[in-house]
Image (tube, rainbow over all chains, first blue to last red; front, side, top):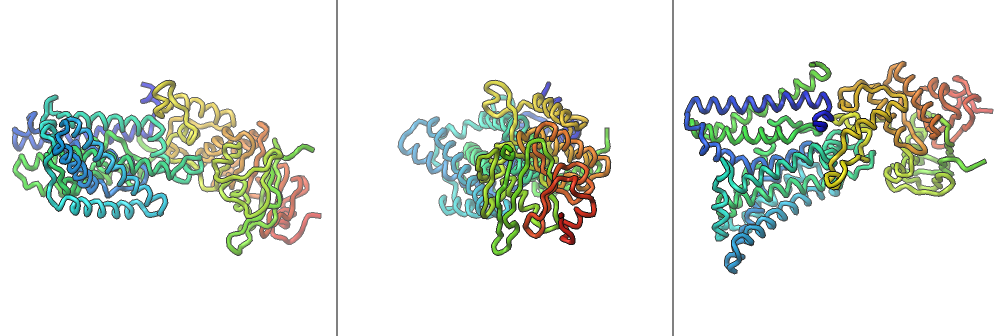
Length: 332
Length: 251
């Protein structure tokens, strides 16, 4: 209760409207798709949407921290591919050695996560030490990671891992699978740290006014390192998630993931100028994205239309933001 | 006489071949407001940066309460009780008043949550409100975002923040810039309150009437050198302007 009270009235107003609006957009989409084809409104379809949603929201949550801090991370999609391949080779090796399946999955997850963290730390280094702007720094690692994933894997998915990884992805808790539930828990924890802890406070502060953060004695460079490492870590986990879903580490599994992640964050109400954004917005933004894909397929529209729908949603979100900052100080 | 609260002795600062500050001596005592004035390029900003720890002087000594110090970053100076309010507002507009007042020195929840860095927003907001009230600043609510405040209110919060955290010296770089007459008056009142609290206040300004109104002593910089250092009562508007421009010198 007290936590709610401590939000600013302006912020509360912003969140209230934005989140509610997003949920309404999502309900409207569900209603429209169901009207076109009643099959859409089923546990099986929602299960599928959530399967697609989980890796997108992982990347998007990392991207939220980055965008709120005033940066951008283009490397998340490539990180998914590379970490999936790295984990796949490790798990292939362990299965050949006859290791326990669960141990293998755990070690594979660690390998994927560490790969992501390393890429994130390189991003952080390029931004804080080599003084590159985030767009360029992460464009560099995006290309490097994508290339490495292809070279390392020979361009083909790396299989031969534990079978149990695949069966993990079967929904059992309503529409949720075990990896899906883990993703929900991770997203919730990230949300708490963004909105209630010092880590999040500093993330907003550097995105809002880096000079102010620096003169308040915050170690701004170290904070950027942590943010990009977090983004890499979550993308690495998304790489492992795709492994479980596909049963192999495909170098192209995260292809275009950075754009989905950025789209989810922007639809969720964050501003690319920094200092603004909520995890709940990102969560619903990612849900809207993945619902669009599934819905269009089910009502028989070519899924390529997804890009058009997403483009319209992004434009609407940005227009709304411009309208809001233009009417600052007004309202109730 | 006891040692000054904060002192810069024979400070020089060179940027390449440009001498921005040339052997300047500067002292500030507890409970004193010192005006630092000079034309553009006279070296005011350079002196402020040396005093606040943002830059290191090329030569000379920095002394706090008789002990020599050297700052590697603003953080060092802040920890020694020297707060600086920069000309460009040092607030994060998207954060609340409370979050800004406590930026960089957050209070945490008790117990395990606090260990993980979870913040005690309620406590910070309450204390921020009390701190600002104590230095004579009326801000509607600690939970409002800075971006929802007027220019004058923002400046008031920034000054209140600096005053409430400073334990020794507060350096205010053009704090009355862009403010209306009434708001500027409030800022001057806050400076007097800081003085009454026993702080040393360094007031950098181009608005000479403000300087003459509130300071105890005025230091004039010209071309990187201190050309005058005298009680405010020795100046009037004409002689102060003359000293700054170099058209006349104090007897």
